[in-house]
Image (cartoon, rainbow, N blue to C red; front, top):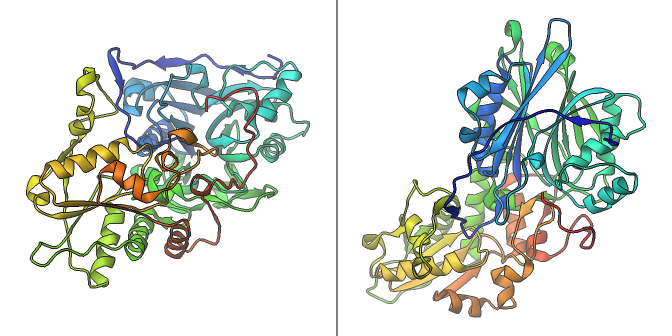
Length: 520
């Protein structure tokens, strides 16, 4: 191909089940998770468990590239990828076949529409004039249409609609002499959100865009390399480090390109480059609100700590309602599972404010209902929520219920859950959301509905009308200012946050016109 690289043959695992439809929560989808390993015995095994730890960031498919250094010093790259969960794609024999001390992995998000061709699944694994190169990317390039148009005018052949492929063309077309300079040159031409891991014959390269939209961290595998040497890992979230028993070292900073190589193994030091910054920093605040796992440490702080503070701030802005004399105190309940930690903070702050209340679990969440489920007949479609959530009548009956959730997308699930609470005998239902109304789509690596589909836009931001449609007695959202203040206060970060989905103010210019929607 004119791009100067060729694709390796793939061993794939197809795990699509006919007769099933997506059981999509009324939530948002992450784009993907990335994981890299350098200098570890059975690196593919470590990468496998790291990918399992990142499964929440993508369920459509997974892939893994392993690099084995032969006796003559040559690098042998092997790729395995397929559709489904990590445990579906990789059988024990698949992981065993991926020999080597280096590896990178990728988990891909689950789309709301059509599936992507397997050619678009990552990691990409290619060979060009400078040797082997494998790449995994989390995020979305805001100048993807511009870059793709340029390469097409140059006669470059592309093999997918995934913007991540553009990195390969940028690297292979760079006029720089060394491979590391080519990679750096490519990264300076990309705009938008990108946390990227690249594996070459000699290096593991970790890059985070100058805005720092998506998280990326470094870990150390003490004594896990050949002859007792240390290995290193890079991951989207620290929960992946925990699963493979790696020590957290630090975050990759916004605009930082870190090189892990033989020198790193010998001396324990990293070589770093700094990408030029055009638009400042803007870490995705929705990682704290919903996407990241609560046991992860991202942007310098544990997610659970930040979510608790969001709940406390929500209680200050929208405290629990007063009840009539003789009525039991309000009961605060979370929508499981992502609202649990905000609910704890909300309850703690209400008690601190002297508001009499209790906290309980108002729903049983069926853990055996996955993302696929048998499609019911049209008249029974509402059963899909009941299949997953069952209200606890003994907790809710006769009570004023304050239900906490992290966000509302289209509002359909929220409305059904309010109805379930009333069906269990609740006297009143007050909805509290630990983030502001979502009014705009994300162009930096999240799968959001269109602007027209978002619940808040259906009523022009009229909170009372929104509460009436939900059939709730009241509705309270955290303000954008309260969200940023709480996240900054609890995380202690020195960097700013992106809140474009709440304000419509995008920190990096977004091309809304172009060659058509890319399948990220």
